[in-house]
Image (cartoon, rainbow, N blue to C red; front, top):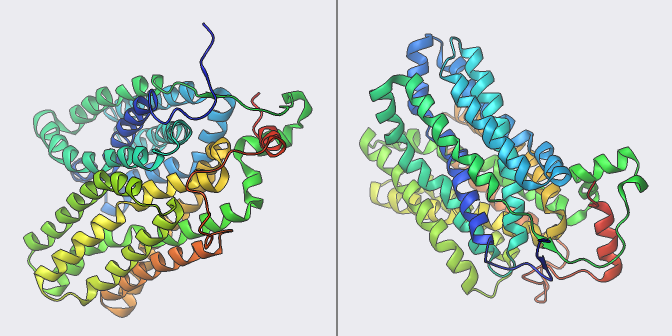
Length: 433
């Protein structure tokens, strides 16, 4: 039976199964990374290595996951989303399985850092691109559902991992985690390719040189796309400030004079507000007449303002309220960024755009916390760290003003269909092998 060809994105249907698969994939990749502190403590004790050396396990995982995104996008374009994601699930499963037999920290860095990091990248780009292509009017709602997976996992996994470590040791815990991660292969199998009817001539692969084909697979032509580069630059600025509050909120609360339990509750409150924001954010995005890029700009600006207010809060009640606002507002940024990306480059180029966007954002994410730590060392206070983080968010939101038609009331909320000539040109850039 020949595959069904849609005249436009179905905006639902099997797309919700794609969203469910992406939800689980984010929970078992980013959710595990966020909750890996339980194993971190066990690694410190067992291998008797300093925390600076042991931290490389998580750092390499995140770095490989983010920086290999263009490779995952190219493979997804060349061979299809489903097989690439299934291979990613196998890599992640094998990474945790082999790590359970590790005898040195170097082996942990190789198995967990490189293997599971690469597996996460092979899962992330294909699934996120398919979610974007399956949805049109409900695209923002779908992305909010998907990104809530990492937040929910961040609350559920730490006690689960602690139970596994207490019951079976860290090796047994990783073995069980490997079994759980094997479900990623099934999630990859759910990524049914979407066939959308296209008009215009599509050249055969023989008509393209090897260099042009590689540039097309990696989406390098987007580097000459003004709106994409502005959007990526804004994302880089946001990423510079994104992880600073995560690292510095608890020590800032202790420095302000609150005890350890009050400080820990602030972090928990931010996590709960983040989950609530991602659940309600999709509904709020669908209720407003604002374009997705305007919503992203507004939420980013408000997030920056909330971060600027944290150092000004001196009573615990005010700091708790401001922290909850930060968690709720910041939860909408990632879903809205991926939803807006399709309006910037078009659904047909979303795969390569995700890969490049991840590389640029990860550069900022890696540089932000050390930079803010240096500022704290120079000033002797965490206040400057939050002022810096909030300023990065505000600068990122204002950068969106450089986008074409940003101030136009007619700016489409959904990327318009391309005329025949332009669509033929874009299909030429993305012609499958």
